[in-house]
Length: 246
Length: 351
Image (cartoon, rainbow over all chains, first blue to last red; front, side):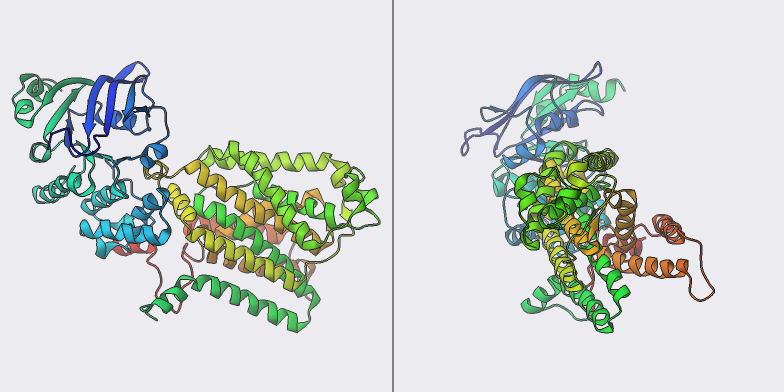
């Protein structure tokens, strides 16, 4: 899975990306390249800058320095909707569904914004929801879903029209082991089904270790380790970051 | 309840709110037209013009979630632009001597005139919206309010084109009950189709969660601007209808009072529902008419003048406190089909 030479080999690359908030450096010169077809884990203690990095890679945060490259193109100064339309999708920790709209329309929004007619968008949304086991809830307002289903709808919305890359921000947060297993299954299927590269932020180590071929560890905005799950798990620097200081 | 379980029934159900609203208004129009009551007919025409305005307000406010205080400005632009083309051939030099020679010497038919007037309002909305639609929430609302004040002040001082603080009189009274009805149905249909279009869907998503909408590929600024321009077009046409209903125009009629009344209608009916927009117009028009009659006195009984304004104000405060989703609960009318599960109702049922 970590073989890089698959398909057209499009990459999403953070090159020396830094994000600063009034003197605080939230992300500090981070390098990483996400390839299509792989699942990359992004971990680190709270406040390590994981979400900020994702924001910088999806147009929600202008980096203070560095570039975000989609293929050869620097997208760091472009708008979130442009980036989504050109193949980089994301989810949010809090779900951020369109609560007053039916579940199906939550997914349709992304499909129509990417150019489908409403009829085609609806069919496409239903396909995705069926895959995620949410077809029966399609007509329900998204605001009343339990949060496990909320995350799934968020994932379906991000996967509409098969983006080249999808960045999942803690899809399993607050879930039981059983629920985590379901989400792991979903995440595992994404690369083959949609041909995209997945960046997975997650606190749950079981999920990370279970689905990621390689892992990038951040602490205080800096890269402190990268490697396979086994390598990262036994890295003293990583263990120290998680346990050593608070 | 009828279950929409065949393709034909599903299609009928999809357009059902449009059918109910058009037929509902038609019944009112026919009854009042047959009654021959001239005063009632005047109230009806005014109400139908307001349906055009409030449907246009719904198109923008209902789908974007941004309250606009500026649309009456677009109505004014449309009202004067129509008058420039159709007004009073013999007195035009007197009221609006500054008009270009072409407009002074030619009189146009009402329909192309009102379309051009709507277009002018839309162009002004495009230019001003290009700046204001970048804002969100209350900042955007204040921006539209400022816009209305700017339009008002400009038209008040621009006396060679607008007669300024005095009135332009002698407009042909083209807006009959039936003309009003046709434009009301056109406006309702446009608002209905828009909110079911992909653009309406995209804009509504930004109303629920702007950040998530951007992440889903929605160009929030562009979608807002589109709705702003389309709704300004219909407000402009409503202005043309209004002038040709009264037969005269004053800048003062396009100010806070009109803004407040039309917004109250939308809020009362339910801001996120086209059914609410129409219901709000009907209910408030009836209530205001009854109160106006009481103000002038029925027999020995009368209530103080301006009671109607006070009453409307109180009703709006009560609605905002106790039922923010308005009379319709922000839902469209589907009866006798099964209703949509509105988010508010569903959440209530869950808790």
